[in-house]
Image: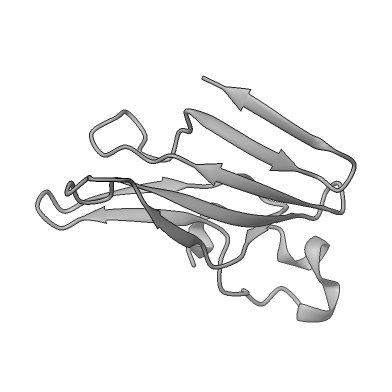
Amino acid sequence: MDPHLGTDFAAIAPIMSGRYPPYNSLAHYDESTGKTEVYFLGRTHLMQEPGFIPRASSTEEGDRYLMELINNYRTLSSELRLLSPRPGRSSCFLSDTELVCTGNGLTTTSE
């Protein structure tokens, strides 16, 4: 949880009185470089705990897929995203393909 990102918790869940729930972003910490990369979708999004899916035959650290359920409180929808983080890219959380399911249908986007 990074409170400096400015998530608008009072608007998302007034009953929480502005307190912070556990996840508003994902981060990857590279132990060898000490660098942290953050994936943040905005002030009205919260994230569930991600599922990790190993990439076949890979031994590189962080080389896996992340399945992420995201709560979008601006549109009052949930999004299921399959992220393809790649260490060493400008942002390791940019997806080759994102699968977004909003309850009204399924869409895919490609870089």
